Amino acid sequence: MGWRRLYLDGEVTIELLARLRIDLTSADFTVGTLTAVWGEEADAALHRGHRVPARRALDARRVNGTAEAIDTLARLFVLGLPVDPAEAATALATVGVDGARELAIVRASDDGQVWPAVDLRPYSFVEDSGAVDWWIISDLGEISLGHALSENHVLGVGGASLTLSGLMVHNPIDSVLDLGTGCGIQAMHASRHARRVVATDISQRALDFAAMNATLNSITNIEFRLGSLFAPVAGESFDQIVSNPPFVITPRIPGVPAYEYRDGGLVGDALVAEVVAGAAIHLKPGGIAQMLGNWEYHHGVDAFERVGRWIDAARVGSPAGDAAVDAWVVEREVQDAPLYTETWIRDGGTRPGDEFDRLSDAWLDDFAARGVTAVGFGYITLRRPAEQTSPFRRLERLGGAVTGGLGEHVADTLGAHDWQAALDDTALSRALLTVASDVTEERHYWPGDEDPAAITLRQGGAFARVYPMGTVLAAVVGACDGELSIAAICAALAQLLDLREDDVREEVLPAIRELVETGFLLI
Image (cartoon, rainbow, N blue to C red; front, side, top):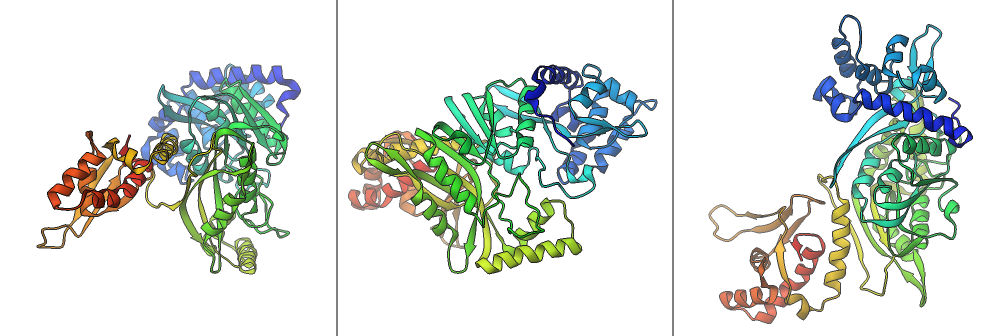
């Protein structure tokens, strides 16, 4: 599909999108309504790439052979199926089928049926002010196309997009850079807490989709710039940088597709290393960068050794010279080379067969030649210190389920680190702390024993961490109700257990610092 540059006839495009917005609103084309239309089971099947249950539900809703507007829009733009021209005209009454064709979101076949030219679906999220409903336009997926994706495919909102938007810190600020904006979803989220957003991408096609989505959803404070990585913002700095970069590790071999939305065009994980280095340079003092990434495990080398070197090399200018950035790396998953290969070949729309085998050989040959045994996936948060403070460096592996809305936890963790790092042990001992409301304590006993064999704290939210404790620390944490200082609790516990007060404090204070930083204990 030849995609029009939005700024060439901006006034016409804006007017047509405004009309389309009226039609989508009139049909109540939202996530909640669609789920009610075809049911929870069909909705879950759609998330697995199976559209038949949803299509059958829409078929069953037809009355006297006629479909409601919501059903027509769902069949056309979500399921990627053709619709009757009369029904399309009814569902798109304001923008009109001709207007939709002018926007290049539908096309007509020789038999007169109206076919989707894009994927257009509702998107919903909840913030402090309440629920927000948007619509997101992107390229048609492989199910609608019936074949593998093109290399310039523009992806809609996927799992990685949802992960990053959930991680994003939403404190009110002046400026945000969305590096590699794709369909624009991160820039749109950032527009709600930033005065201005700059969204960049190497793909003009992606920028056109992103601009279209911003306009469709009445968002006016995003500027779109074409170019690779940080080239479009050379010499500029931002309060926040967010990036879901093309981090997938794809062999640079002729005949292996390189998708713009996911493949960075560099060897291995070098692109993620470049984004880390560039983000450090383009942050304002106190600014943070949040990104997703992959990193390689090589024979005999832990991936965190390599990621640590990236962070060590990421420097920011200061009056005293180059300074290090604060960094927090969370590894969520590790895939061995065969599984990683299979995951991303399937992602491009290729299914098992001769072509799948050919691509698998290319990927595994590349990994073997470079000594790659596995690939990790996770999140990187960087911060440019506003002033000389105790360095913040966390590299951790966290498995298990993760709750949504981690942005608040990220901000709280940075703030908690700064708070406890500024206190010596004497000052920390005077603190009045409370146990977070989502924290529970677990005790495990061998049968017949009076004393527990293991005691752990467990978070119900955030990263769902589990923290092992000894008896003394468990007693101190259990008494943290905001009424007594850590020093008072330690003194009482020392008297009760016939221990030296200094010994108790020396044992528990390092753990107290960690529990404050990770959100088990609240200031």
